[in-house]
Length: 365
Image (cartoon, rainbow, N blue to C red; front, side, top):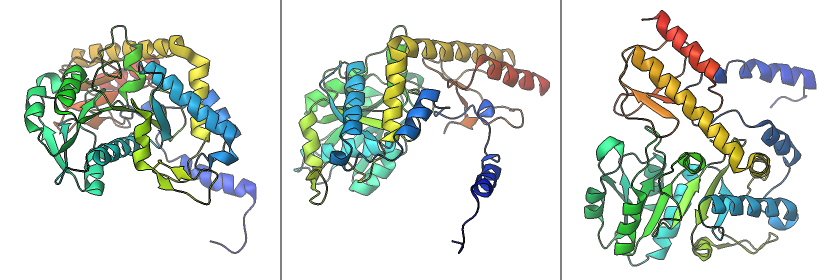
């Protein structure tokens, strides 16, 4: 740190230089995050000084978090769900499995059973909590093989996990079958819908994945992805709100005396921004956004197949994967673990962006 500060204009100019090095969104085809809605940005600034970690100081912002949880609970077919805003899917997944472990203290060598498609946050979770992670293989179309998953469950299994909107292929596991396995074995069932939670409900014929499915105990979903919120804003929802009590710790010097959250200080700005978008758009607005993303996904598939790229699976949401091949310079596209090209058609990937990409693809054929 320098002894004397700089002028405001100098600081802004200095930082702008670094910001200019970042890749522009109109060339990012690999991210599950997007440009936040303008109302989220505006509201974020309004609430930038709020801290949900000490709710008694910010009762209004705390009520907004409650409204966000209620709205997402309604979307997940359970208005009475308990929950709180997290920093994203990684924290939500960790907290869900922490609860599952607390609920089965008799497990001497606890394990969880996850699909091969599971996000790497489960690796972190198992490392932190000292759990064995059993990985169930893929079945058809990169969905988990539920029969193999059931075979991996034993007396020390504390949780079984399903994915609704896999990170690599955008697939939805058979959550009905996974929920049934959980009920049959009396274990906690967590659904990681960090991406799909704000997509699947707005598809024309959505697959069952949420609290509508018997056996589902918890759901993670991220408003900072398809919810168009500012980063970071995730949410963990529980069917039984009282289970959050298993995570309580004493907080004697705060305005509340117990807290179940992972982080102490928690920003209220992104939470208010997320709720602002939900309030502004409603279900109708989100259906329109998802429909636009799906139309752009179809156009990309059409164009890539015209160039001889074969789709890995038929997209069921706005994620498209293809056989590997050349990509024009300057475009950010990722690869799956199996080596397939992976595109995520987020709201910032407009029809013009798709056409520009396909035009550049044509130039390298």
